[in-house]
Length: 248
Length: 332
Image 1 (spheres, rainbow over the protein chains, first blue to last red):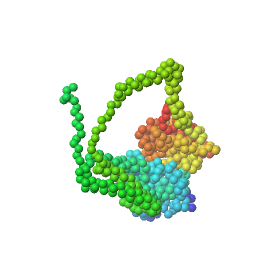
Image 2 (cartoon, one colour):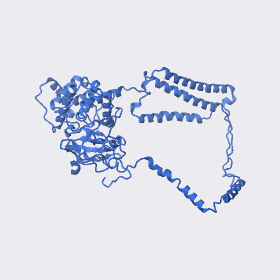
Image 3 (cartoon, helix red, strand yellow):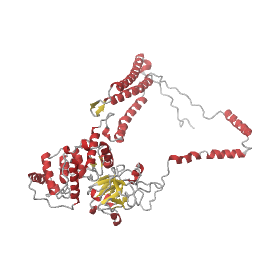
Image 4 (cartoon, rainbow over the protein chains, first blue to last red):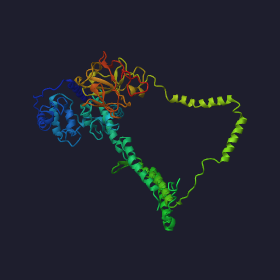
């Protein structure tokens, strides 16, 4: 059921994104949530995104991005941005859940787009297949987010964040909305069930225990090599100095 | 040569006795230190074995900085470290404090043999050589020379066994006219409508009946599909004809060292190779905008077939991946 519903949402978004350019904001909506959202938007977002969310020189248009994009960007604290740096980073959210929902409702009222999801609606424990998720992750995600989901660097100071401890719904919303540098992963190329498998794999990777001492960030030979170069060689140099010292 | 210019052998500095050489108490103390280190090593071994037997392998404790840590692995590591390190430390302490430390000089003998020995050797060689008749039998001398000269060739030829010659393997891929694009993993066909603007998909050529996907083939066939707004392209008419409704396809194999280039930044339309930071501009047919790659990523011409699925219009026009000796670079 959930999967079917999400699939429909995805298709709707597919059609929506095929629509050309900006559209006039829907003005007929009288929902109190939407008008509350509009009030927050005018106060907190419009200076960059424009009075009608049409975008500007420094911020993209929000028409058609859907509630999922708002829920992801505002819910994880990425928006509003703290400064005009290369990339909005995850921080403590500025708006609470109700305000985020109102903002999402307002942006969703502008043009159809993917709806936000809740973690409860994503039954990854039941529908996700960890092995399949690992395969999908290695092909589609590992090049930016690291083979263990630890994140990695992109160009010009941009980066792919670590996926450890990210709530399932934000993973899902990022996949369908393609925030910032990240491309979209359409429901037709990675099905909603496959997305749940990805989430299941991430959850399992997150809970994996460190068998041998410090994980060193799980980024492989880089930190291990650095540790050997500094601590290991330092110890060896110390012993060499002691060996060569004149005995008293 | 005057005596002033000649470098004088400074000799050894005066020997200073160590405390342990003169003071029996200090010697006793040093002996005890060494013994304690060796005892510690033995204790480390006992601890290692005890940890292996008595600590359950699924017990974790929290250690600051290290985080959640497996107790058994940690104890094994500490035990083995103490066991081996203390033997070494004990040996050094022993050598430095107690073993004889008086400097002695042992003159190196002449490298040149005695004149008598040299003369004897030459005489023997001539005598025995004459008896064997090397000078009288040039056939043997020459054939021996031949045999010794060519004996080294066989190991050289055996190097050929290092692997099969690549032949046309690097030059060709499994993409040809009409090959359908399938998703990796999964193997589903793709319609242009499956990709939204800003979406990517990892694709491979459809397998022919009875064929299996080998890693070697994935390593050269892998292709990245990206959908942009058609107006974002900055391509010449030929390359524009290779795209379909804003969908463009590139070989995923970096032209520098062959890493998988799939870090697509959808805002800048840049493709980044994670290995050496070569950056390719998708809107300009993967032109290199940064990094060590010398050539753009090969573009795959795509279209749709009668059933509406994405297919390759033709194979790659240039070899994919990094340079190699026999690569024909006449057309890029």
